[in-house]
Structures are given as structure tokens and as C-alpha cells.
Length: 185
Ligand code: SF4
Image (tube, rainbow, N blue to C red; front, side, top):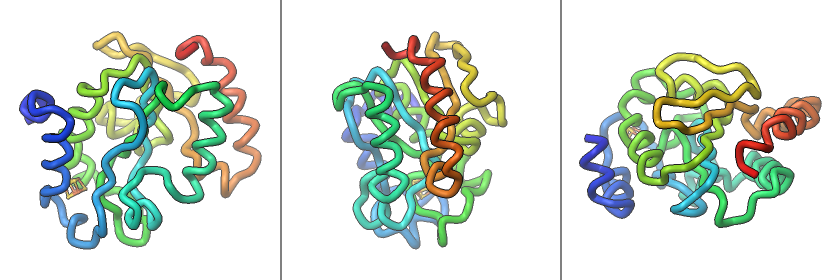
């Protein structure tokens, strides 16, 4: 399925996501949330799932956590053409609950097809849900990059929402970014 999605191009991936009923989350979603940013990104950020604002707009990270992500991106010195943003799940879980394993598995072909299609040099996993979804299990330490079998650098840092609720995370996140700048500069 992943190869078929990639072969069809990005519009095909988008259409399949819009029509998807693989899990029950589509029932409560106003809009599926597909991606924002460049289609030729150096850096791909992967978050968890749409929240209330994202569900309304159809745009990933368009709410409060999005403002934190924008600040992070500015701190990383990335320009608009350098990055894209997607989520593990494309439809909002009710009351922003954590994604279930089955939902992650059902949505994973879209995630992997987006990664293959966008073909970034660096993947930044925003939090543990993205880590578990990408590898199939929790695999990474915060701020310690690894190279995957496709030669991509994979890095896990904090989800931007963590910086809303725990302000001490802001400085910690900057440290994680500073020690990994060589990956994207
Ligand atoms: S969350 Fe993913 S698998 Fe579930 S309905 Fe939406 S697009 Fe399909």
C-alpha cells in the first residue's frame, strides 16, 4: 500500500487520507490534517495528532502548540522552504486523548508514504508518540540522533505542547537543538 500511495503522488496520498475510514477517528473529525510546509523539505517534523484548532483548520500545528513550534523553527534558523510538518494520526482523537496503538497502525501507511515522498534529510520526532510510531516501539533518547536504514538522521526532541505546560522545557529544548544543529545546517 505504501508504494502504491507514493507512486500516485502527493495528491493521491491526500485524496486517500480524505477518503479514509480505516479507524473510527474519521467519524468525529471535521477535517483530516495532512501536512504543511515544503514538499521538498530538508527537515520533516512529525507530531502526534491534530488538536481542536487543527481539526477546524485542517492545518497541522495551527493552535497554541503551533506557536511554540514556530518559535523552535525560528531558533533552528530554518526558512519556509526547509521544512514540512505532519502528524502520526491524520484525524483528531476525541478530547485530545492519546492515540491508540491500533489507530497508529491503521494510519501508519500514510505516515510512511509521506516520509518516502517528502524524502527529508532529517526527521525530527516530536515526542514519544512519534518515536513509537516511527520505529514500532519507543526507541530513542532525547536529543541523541541515530541514522536509519535509509541513511536519514532521526532525532527526538520534546513536543512543542510540553513547552506550554512545563516552561523549564524551553531551555532544555534549546540545548537539544543546539547540540544537533550540524544535522540540518
Ligand atoms: S486517523 Fe488515519 S487511519 Fe484513522 S481514519 Fe483518519 S486517516 Fe484513516
